[in-house]
Length: 83
Length: 382
Image (cartoon, rainbow over all chains, first blue to last red; front, side, top):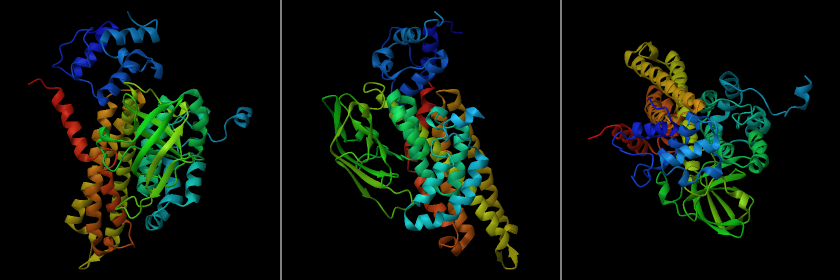
């Protein structure tokens, strides 16, 4: 059971790609998992799981490159998110 | 009551029942005539706006009624039951309107939202090109930054409602990736050439749309221009696929209705068709598949309403199943009608031609099957 933002994001990614062995610092784009379909799924998941809406200005690749970056994005958009 | 007087007048509740009544009165009766004419009458386009059917999912402040996605799917099913060409217009209008709602700035929403909801502005979705259909990575239309805006060059083909639309959502190669641009039809350099005599959805007013040094302001860009710009396309196509899936359910339901009616009146060798086991088998398969397809669409819609990312795959599956069922059962509907099914007196020939289109648009069924199979594979480690 994940209890942190980063863990929840990693769980989502590894549920989609069980063969992936990644840490929160790994660049998921360099691992070859990301296509436009998964990018959309990833954004939808982050928005739903953490109750946020990601504005266009935050839809930048660096915000989604790693689980750590996504965690920082979530905390930035929802400061009271689970740490 | 006072609130009602000052509220936006376009807001109204639409649902399956109201859509069904509207379709039975205004859409279905003229569908064959529209098919032959190759266009939807302007009067009907206006009535769709009066009925609040163009973009009911937009919020009340933009003139919509905040319709949920399950209900939107039911509305598109009912319209698809009556006329796939009208449903096609709703599909592309929905795609543009949804993209605006999801990715538009406040200024873009204020400028276009009420116009799209009312139908004063009709939208079209410009992705396919002569050399790029389901292969979206192959598009060559390009947008180059100039000053604060963009210069657009290229050409799109098979654009549903391209002949009539006022606003195009154009996907083009940008500096870093594919970007989406809102292009008013009356912008200098935009050209429209009608495409007639298509196999199906013949009244959906297809066109080639060309862009010759079209100069656009910065506010033409819809959504981000970087990594996530592909999401505009992915999300928009997802809504389009959902609409086509529900419209395909409508085609199957129309086949059931037409065949049950015909088989109850037509006699062969002294027996009504309805009493013959082989006809019963065809009808039973139609009824079963229409229920299954409707449930798949409802599930995809439910997941959209929840914001659940699994809606994307659910929609692929729903569209694949429903469009395949529509093609299969419309062929059987023609078969049940015999020679009558091949002529203009019964609507099943139109259903048959329209259904074939459903297997091709918004991602061909071959692309869908590859995507669905990839979903199965990616969950398994060799």
